[in-house]
Every structure is written in C-alpha cells, then in structure tokens.
Length: 465
Length: 104
Image (cartoon, rainbow over all chains, first blue to last red):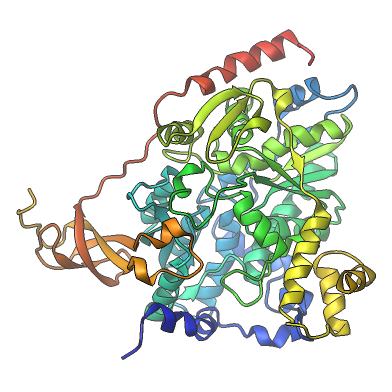
C-alpha cells in the first residue's frame, strides 16, 4: 500500500507533477540554473492565433473596453495643469466565469482534454477556481478545486466562500482547507488519486491564454478610439496576468509602459492562521506579488512561465482603502459595479494618470465580477467585525491588519513605487543561492540578465559584490 | 436534532483532520503550527448516518470521500454585510466635487 504521509507524498512531488502535467521540463534546462524560456513558451505553448481560436470556442475574451470619462475628469482635478491621461478599462468581468482567469483556464482545460485527461485539478482560492470549473463544464471534464478558505475558528474569508460557491455552481468538487501551505500536500494527493490534469496557473499555455488580453487592448484602442496605449496597469500577484498581458502587448507591436500594481499587505504573514482574516484582499497583494516577482520558481510547476521581472517597467503598491474607494467610484461615477480585488490596478491608475499628459492613454486591463462576499461593502463590514479600524482620512497612514483608511479626497489616492533594483537584487541573490557556491556558466549569466531585464555586465558586477 | 438519522442521498458537509498540530510543516508560523490542518468538502451521503458519525459521501466530481458529518444541507453564510457609513458618504461627496469643479 502507498505511504500517504505528508513526508512521503511531498517526496513523490516531482513524479506526481510530471504525470499531472504531461510535459518534460528537462528539455528546456540549460547550464546550471538557466533554462530556455522563449523555447518553452514557443514549443510548449500555443501561438496567439491558436489561443484566439481556442478561447472563441468557449466564449472567452473579446471583452468590452470602456473609456472612464468621469474618473478621468476626477483624476485631472487632482493633477497638475495639462496632466491627467485618458483612463480606459478592459471589462474582464464579462468573461464566462466573471474574470480574466477564464483566459488561462480556457487553455489549461483545452490542453487537458486534448491529452485525454478526464478531469482537472486546481489549487486556488481565487477566481481561477470558478474559471477552471466553468471551462471544464463546457468541455465535459470533471473538476476539483482545492481552496485555503477558513481560519482555525472555522471563519471563512467571505470572498473565498463566494468563490467556493461559484465553483460548485459550475459542478466542481470543492475541497476547503484551514490556513497553511500544506494545502499543496492535499493537492498532490488528489492528483495522484484521480490521475487528473494539474490545471496550474503557471504553465506556458496558461500564460499564453492571457496574451490575447494585451493583444485585444491594442486592437480595440486602435479600432474604437484611433489611439495607442502609453501605459498599461496590471494587478500583480503570481505574475501571470502581467507576463501574459505584456507579451500580448508586444506581439501587437505596442511599446506601452507596463506597470504592476499590488495591494500593500506589509506585516501580514500569508501562512498565519491569525492574520488570515485580518486582510481584506485574498489576491492581488504584495504577499504573493513580491515573492513571485523576486522568485517565480516557487509555483506548482518546475519552471514558472510567469516571470514578471522580464516585463515590468514599474511596480507600485496601493492600500486596501484606496482599492475600496475606487471600487465605489467605479460604481458611482461609471455605473460599473465590480469586485474590489480586480480594481487594484484602477486605484494605481488614478494616481499614475496624473503623471501623464492629458492626451496620453492609460489602460486598466482588468475587472472582476462582484457578488455576496466579493463586494466592497461585504469586505469592509467583515473587516470591522474582525476588529479592523475603518475610517476616512489619508490612506498612507493605514496599517495592514489594523486599519483601513478610505481617502477623504481623490487626491489622496497615491501609488507608491517599489524599487525595481531591490527586486532584481533579491531575485539574483536567490538565484545564486541555488548554485551553492558553484561558479555560474556563461549561459547562466545571460539567462539571469534576460530574466531580470538587465545587461550581463550588471549580473557580473552583482556576482562580484 | 443531533440524534436524528440523516437519509442516504442527503447533501452534507464532512470534515477531516489532515494534519494534527504536531504534524504541521516546519515552515509554518507558530500560531498555525498550534492548530490542525482541517479540510471540509460536500457530497451526497452514501448511507444513512448521523451528525458527527464517520460517513462517506459522493462529491460533485463523483469521488467517494470519507469524514465526520458536520453539516446537513449546509448554508452559504456570506452576504453583502452591514451598511458601511464611510462608504455611503463617497458617492455624494464625489458628485459634489465633480459638479462644483473644485480644484485641489
């Protein structure tokens, strides 16, 4: 009989994963720490044309692009004269399961069906669960979603309870766990037990699924408004949204500045039972965004296809209060009631628009659906019940896990830049640690340079330090 | 209520302790290490059972999973919450600002 203890299952992790993805990552390995990223994306992924066709089959993509005229007007009122870019919004909530994650799930489920898998499994507390369940329903596959959902008191984060409900609505089996990274152990056991496909968010095809988003932004701006994007703001967590969108923008010939945005949750531990329900955002925050940017290969696949440092021009944070505030603005001024987690990039955009000229074009590339639990009112009410102090004032004074401050004036919505060089150095430090003192080969140096978008000389001088 | 037999085929929630406090992964913080890793799932009861019994259910994916019967016809408890005055104030304030054209 198989040993299903925690240690035994974790020790078989590679073997389980290989079966559940059906792809040999070793073929792309080079040097000591390098791998051929572009080859992996081309050979194991799908071309843009293929992705468009696959997504069309299940009603994914081609979401509306709106110009947010009232929010633009408001941003201009708080900007220096002549500043305040036109703000556009890609309404990804219009996808079948209500978020851009349908794009990734469309590819993962298509790939699973093509390779004869009977079902798909995804480890996610986010919108991806509903996306996988919805796409699996369309293609006649079974689905199992594994969620981190409640704390040791049995209290659910309302947003995750809603996502669990949505997964069930699409016919998925939902396994819900208390707080802890050992969720991965349960995930592995389910993969082994069922022989289903690992619908990871981080495979080359899952990332290829997002490329259409970047592509559509460029096409729609051209067709509907005869303009080009100057800046695109992307909510950043695991890095896939950013990587895929940026690749799509580049494939459409755009050189727009790509900005990542995350909710600042500094000081809250992502694996802490007590911190779990002290945060009002379960994704799009720095607790995922920063570690995945500075070390992408921490995901549920051997090599993560989402590599934000390759595409990021800037990475900014905003507070929880600012994301809630713009969610309210989007409903009140633009008539679009959407989920708060999808509006992280909108909060950043209100601030970034002030840096650009009035005739420049800034695109917020995502929204998500809203509903019970996944709603600004539900989250603020829940936070207050959990002892979080809610007030109106300057959001810069808020402390994650202790207070949420809604801006008393739109001028107080202010994105804060993270130091890109710090992020790169943190990545390089981690990468060099994997060598355990061995000297990097020339192909390792050029890989590292590509992976954090610097020159080989930058890498050489970092190593010398 | 607790003694009542739950008929076969009823939609229920079951619970399993996956890891007890002593078995938690070494990297988890102290507060998490102190509590068990618990899993719940839902399915159709395979055989008549009672609350707190160890039972088997068939899940929506067709798997049979065992655990302690904890809820019968489980309710979704998430909602839109209590009214939040600070949130309600935003709409009127921002409209006045736009209409008045106030500069910062």
